[in-house]
Image (cartoon, rainbow, N blue to C red; front, side, top):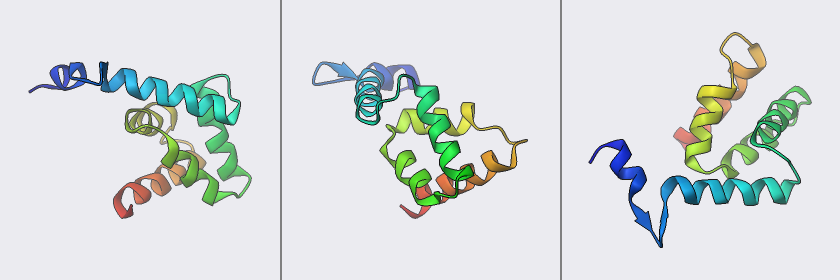
Amino acid sequence: MDKQERNSVRINGMTIEERAEIQLYELLEEFEFESEAEYYQYIVDSKINGVSKQVVEMFEYLPAIYKIKFLNQHLRDDVETHRKIKEMCIKFLIDG
């Protein structure tokens, strides 16, 4: 089964992507953010403001698809703070 087939598998009538999108929307609502980018920036700002525990907690709340998107598309390797956040999040994924 390739990636497209896996993503099109329906669980309770929804694909994995649809379910993740709903989870993200609920998360944005809970934290009163208007966009995914705003949520991501809040994670970055948490690190800048020295609230490292919050970085990991907010990352943990993200659906898996959006964790990958945050790590691969939002964080830049040429920005020191972004590299540190990426390290923290990957450590969380490895250590659980």
